[in-house]
Image 1 (cartoon, helix red, strand yellow):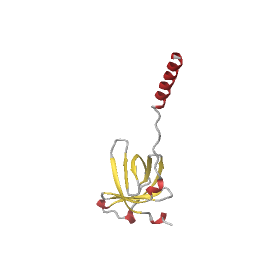
Image 2 (cartoon, helix red, strand yellow):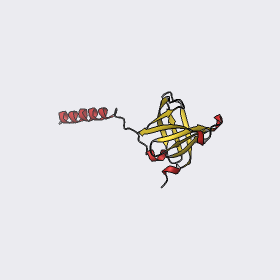
Image 3 (cartoon, one colour):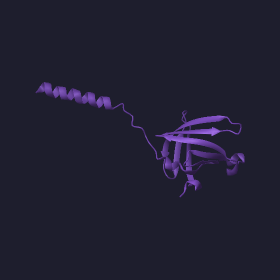
Image 4 (cartoon, helix red, strand yellow):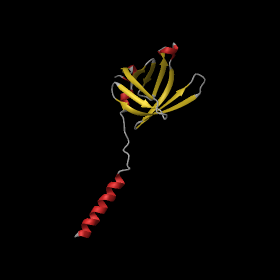
Length: 127
């Protein structure tokens, strides 16, 4: 009987130890991104077709002059690909820390966090 209990104990310990290293990916609902977000003077608008645009009022840029980008969200990874005026493509990768209907926080690979508040739903995404 002691051998059976010892075997069960060892197997249970091995099973629990092997499960400890499994990371469950964090996922976010991408529809929460749709709309206009603001961090200070920076405005980002995300559309449901994976496109968007950004502008910074401190640079005297208006929404009509905004720069386009494409975006994708996989689990908690947000990828934004900016296309500059001269055709240069600049990809940026972020990890979302918080995303809900009103607030978004994401960080780059260097730990620089950005905190946005949603100011409106995207006009083109509303029924």
